[in-house]
Image (cartoon, rainbow, N blue to C red; front, side, top):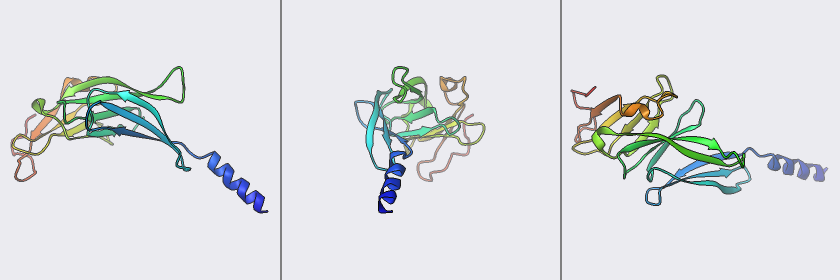
Length: 169
């Protein structure tokens, strides 16, 4: 009986679900890592991808989970990557830069978030301060360049954290 219990536990672990984790870095060299782990806490680097610039914040598009957006403290562009499978090794995930767009008058960005509900935009914000601003980018499958830039931008008041009354459009 005890042998069957041990065998059951082993089978449960051997068929553990595999999860993926995307990890960016804050300084050069600019990389995004794809890590793989399961319930047995086995962790391995699946791929180390050179990217547009070091990303302080990354977000994943929720519908297909194949598009990753990155914000950088060193670049004024929001980068868009496509998560693909290596044709030679089907278990290896790779990132491919598919576009980028300049944020808020060329400011660097501290944050980026992929919208979860239609119209599925991508939202970004620069560091707070005298010129802090936010931006909304289109994110349709055809807009690989994020629409060429933000569709909407707005300024933030440094002392209040809220938008200025006259938001730009």
